[in-house]
Image (tube, rainbow, N blue to C red; front, side, top):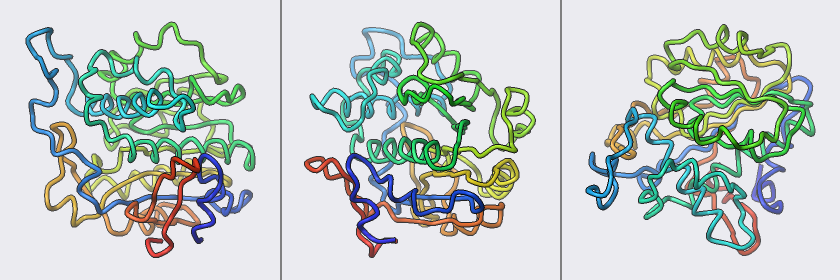
Length: 303
């Protein structure tokens, strides 16, 4: 559980390899208590810098927050001839809101993206995972870029998000067996029923990605979401999500005009209670992306 776990090339695959494949489930949370990871942008952040040039994109405010995340991935891809984040689709997924690339939080979003990518790859190789569920998927592009041709990707989000996303990816070839859209609002929908209707098999191991989702789930709904995910997870499954401490959120945190609803100091307990055998929490304060050596490193003081 020390720094060496993060010192593999490109991304921290060894972090995920620590977890047993056959019996235990892995709930992995990289929790930040830092205000800087969220934007304090004002309500006009939905508009281009020169708003008079065109009408702002008509999107639900929560769905809109997926665009600056795609913008950060696009910047990470374009800033290097040999990028750590290989996401050529990201610029398209910004949906024309190119002003969002100015000031994009490339470092934080790059680490998030790498963690999710590597969990998917590791569980695929070590646990035989062939289904990936992205909750609050937003502009996730893994179905188009990870080249897992035997894996089905389930993207769960609201219809308004897919109304913007689907025309952007309509002509983009998949790099997976299938991509399924699951429409609904987390905390209100019957997640299991919706996933099964789309072909999900809860008897098989799953990778769950909660990238950027947790701050938007209310304190009242979070325990039930953890139980729902746990009940749908076969042995060998893995999960990761990033969240914020209760203290940080209670101070007031806003990302592109949308306030965070919750923060927790007991993410590990929540998901163990939900049915996961093991849950680890690491504070993002101690995680650093070493671009020169193309590795992520962790200061063990923050585990």
